Length: 238
Image (cartoon, rainbow, N blue to C red):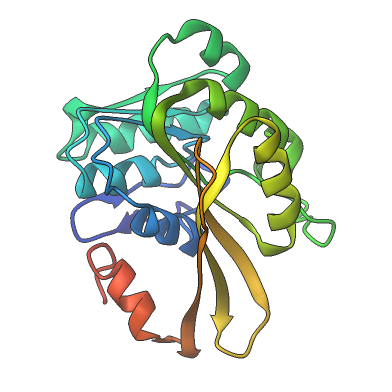
């Protein structure tokens, strides 16, 4: 069964060859990510279908939007999605592990974005490719932060989405490489359900953290105003 392309307002995502399908996390992160520092160069680490890079191509004037994807089939799909978009001339995907990419590239990026694969004990789908995509060993937080800190320009920002329960650990790992949170939004499915995700913006400057919360739904398929406001430029039905 071919997974159908996922249609957004200004682009579509083919995802039949990707273990990680289009999900709320990427759309949230892409829409939430601040562009107030007008980034000229953007890097999407672990791009998968390329959705984050495409959202940022729609939202920003960045001339260079690079993506990096290690998994061969996902890489091919990402390239296809870039080439099919209106922003093909600004988008480029590298097929490489992060360790190699750092050595090769002498570019620094004003904005780094990542929806890294994470893995929890209660998540085993029995599908090996999908499990690897979810398995944090594919990209441990420590390696991600260490690499990102080397690729980030002095006044740049890293924006990331992780499980809420990893937040404290993630922030202390970030501080070890000189990165500090400037903004955190904690996400719940519904107003009364437990916190599920943390959207985090990191910079090289230690500052007062702007912290807030976002609930996605009021009841099933009835979305909160905040969520609609954030994602309405992308989702067809909002």
